[in-house]
Image (cartoon, rainbow, N blue to C red; front, side, top):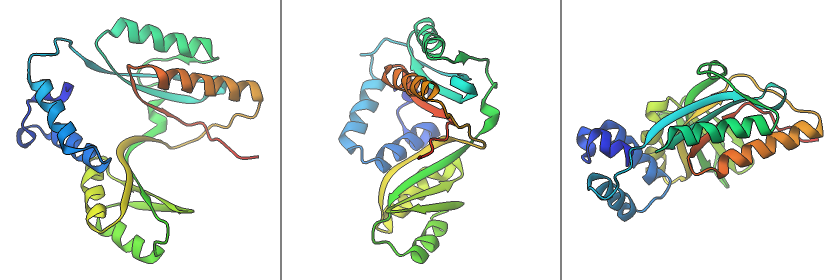
Length: 211
């Protein structure tokens, strides 16, 4: 809706809207739902002005956290996010304080059960991906951010079941938590952020290891 208000309802003239439509389709959002949201955004029914905001900070023991928000009340959202960091052993930082530890990449997840690995590798690179990792019955495929939805659509056309496709912040380094109290607080911080209606995405570099 924000995208339509900023660039218009025609995807041919609004590249960001075109990418979002591809993302929605790659995540199996029905066409009727997409059309309804575009028409609603193009109308005069919603008078709220939304803006995208990104917050950066540290969780317990220096875990890097990026929080992407969409809000109609900047003061409310900033207060909520700061409160969560303070309450659960972290601190909200300034822009750029942790983003240098992440790279933006396109990430596609597909169902790889009963898939031939060599064929998958050929198909993944033909679709325009840069790398892939096969783990059990799921493959995580990496692309350039601008290519993620096009690659996901290509894989769908090849017959693969695309579970998700999005541009994401991928950590370049990871932080481990070893004591139970820090692990508990980090989980509480992530839960609080993800339950907030203004929060769209949460990225972190916590390496969750299995004992």
